[in-house]
Image (cartoon, rainbow, N blue to C red; front, side, top):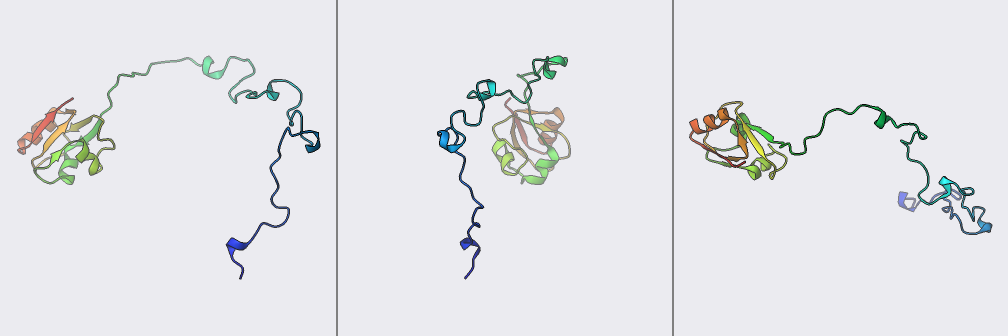
Length: 149
């Protein structure tokens, strides 16, 4: 019976890999198809794609502006209406709980609570930062906000 896993490649379809530099009988011995000497004959030789033949490269010709602030703190943002929708009343809301429900991607990175929306349920919120409006809204609903950042 003919099956797909028993069909072989037709004769001449598969060829052996060229083994370069394996003697004169192979047809590509000695220099192995690299010619004689020069940059491209060397191991690791050749020029990178961005090389412009000694002309001043484009990335050096263009003016540089600004800088990168390596000390910038990036917060994951969570709003009150999202807490209201995803958590039950009396829940403890911290990094791991927010990651579990999919509101933040990383539980170990700083989170900021923002005041969009309203809160009827009481929560115990532990975040790195919170806006004044968010803190007052949570406390008005009978919850607490602990800022540890």
